[in-house]
Image (cartoon, rainbow, N blue to C red):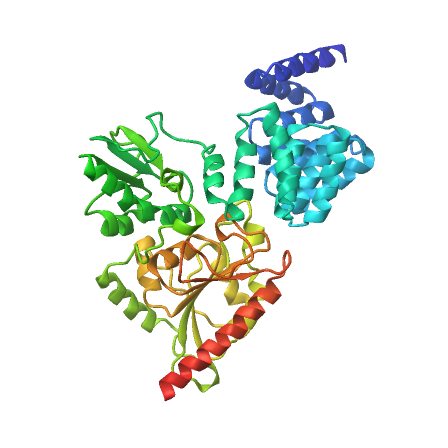
Length: 498
């Protein structure tokens, strides 16, 4: 027993000193001798959580709670690991168990609040986080989580108080700057928001370009977020090229391969477009695409919204017109309409996105929209969600994405549609950049760029926004969209029939 205890103490000392590899090796040796040693299982999981491997943490700590189910700390750490693994549905009952065993576990209180926040249970999340805040006032992670929940409840002044409290202790806390920036951006206070948004991670060590005349310098514009963000903010690239050309400089745009063909066609005459490699191309100054609004001092009234600024190749449009015409089911239009509106549909985003459970629509909620007469739906859904329509009885919607190579192909499909109905994912930005009519289905707490309450977007004039009236209520949102679509399809049919 003394030998095992000594080995565990040595492992814990390595762990507490930050020697992760030595601690992991020591825990491994203990478990080789005693595979069910609960403290070692627990601490091995905690170590993996601290090194960013949430899935492994869940496995190890899960073994610990099975061996010793009455110990509160492993339950709390298991719940926190499940939350970090983006599994809040599983985390919530685990954390409830932890808090039943130890109501004063501040980490479990905080993780429970964060899990309920991820599930869009904002009032419940706030209550748990306020308990955590009372238990340990000034705790940074608790203040950040509580401020974020208050922000999403539109209690903006209270949220900023929490973020300011964090920044008073640590003025360089990037998470607090970003959380506060999102609250300002979603309210339309863009200029203040851009400043806080600069606390994102930056990839390059070269000097940043912030709007100043570059002389003869080469400016590198590059992606630092997702596809939709790149599509939204690439509108600024020609403006940068104008400034650079006036002083004899030049602009390089580094982008993802899936965007290269589209961006190169639309921007290539004045900007060198390259696909992203392991090392950046030679340059003097750099600017992430999402930093361009700050560089240009963009406010709500002066967003550069000249649309379209992206367009597919005419040959691609013709090829995809033929393919869409040949898709099975395209001729099936309900209620005797001779030809229906061709409407693209996307109901799910990237499942790896942190907020995907709130922004994506369950397939089972789609029938009210899919049964609108006079509409020829075409699925533009990708990934595992694409098969969901096949499980709906009486629904036959062809999928157009099987032969899509990149966003240039997707743009050519959009050019052949009357309308796109989509959740908040990259294709909404593409439709907006092309000026294609697009209805965007938004969760109750939207991404900052769609702001609050309004049905239009100053970024994209062709978008119409349909919002959840309350968290999780896609029924009302889709019912409203279906009613508007029904009226629009009927008008289109009257125009065809005279």
